[in-house]
Length: 245
Image (cartoon, rainbow, N blue to C red):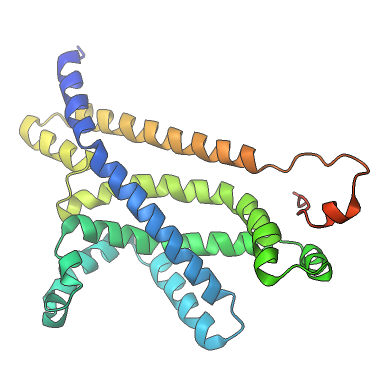
């Protein structure tokens, strides 16, 4: 029979660790997104001394397991006296900060390629049209490049966000007591693996559902409405055209 009392108590204990999981997710998401923008700017540069380091970064963090990266940051860097004596040790001595850093560095490599793919999808004709009507580089970026890139990258980025939610579970292996970490503690005391992990899976399922709905709402807000026939051509020329799917 199903022990509803045990399931209810387990849910409450796991929900008490939910703020830690959400903190890991949002902190690594924001840091990873900011870093990915820098990587993309270097990656698309025509100067090899800028683009090749960005390519190496992407290859490194996409080609190695996140768990290995997390262990290297948490256990490996502390072995060097120069690191322990530097200002970085204030951050690296914290398991939570190491988990956020490793998650952010990893997701930045994937996000950079997602954004680059969206950037390459911008029609060259729209860029030339923007320059032809006198848009500056910054105006071209904000009025044409950024909107189209964002619309094209959102579907793939939603998948990366979902993977990031699930990747936060690895933080429990470096003694961060998130939902998965608390679940493991409960299992060590009760030996009821099925019920505990079923509760944890339900929490992650709800989190990922909310992420999917949030991205879908953002996609709907960014959707380009059908342009009516006629109108002012000068105004329409400054607006990005919807790309062919």
